[in-house]
Length: 221
Image (cartoon, rainbow, N blue to C red; front, side, top):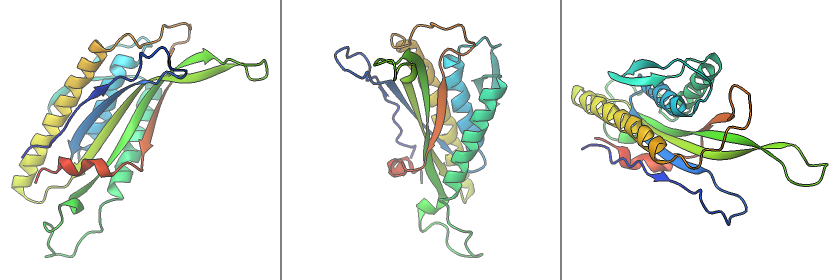
């Protein structure tokens, strides 16, 4: 049984009557085993930034699970992606129970086979703060948010390894496809570039260590 995965693109922008315009939100879900989680997460993040990183870069690609994905060659961004992917891996790994004694059953509780977590990528624009001269200055307003949900499962048998491998490839390919679809269909919310700085839109990548209950539907065993 393949993972029941949805990839909704929910746009909350566009209501000009709202005082605070909400950012456009996109959601992605991927599956991985413990040995591949870093590569999968970094692959998804680089694919997102490839379409949202506006400084001049030379297009590059890299291989993840036999899939060719775009890659952003920028030292600062690469370091941030590596750090956040490692932090998510540690968060997921902390959910796994201690090693069981030799001969103990490992199939009675499928939840013991891995963990889950998510991170959020946000893009901001700088706007002049409204108010009195005491509160004036620039403020960062989020105009787009990507939530990447990750489920990790550790296979115990050859049959499970094959299922996990197929799930990893299918969800990663689906995520890459949806990234392209989202950025092509949703363009009107992108703010105009009004600065001469190399990166007009600041960004953040945050690991959410609270959101854990959503992934039960992604079991593949």
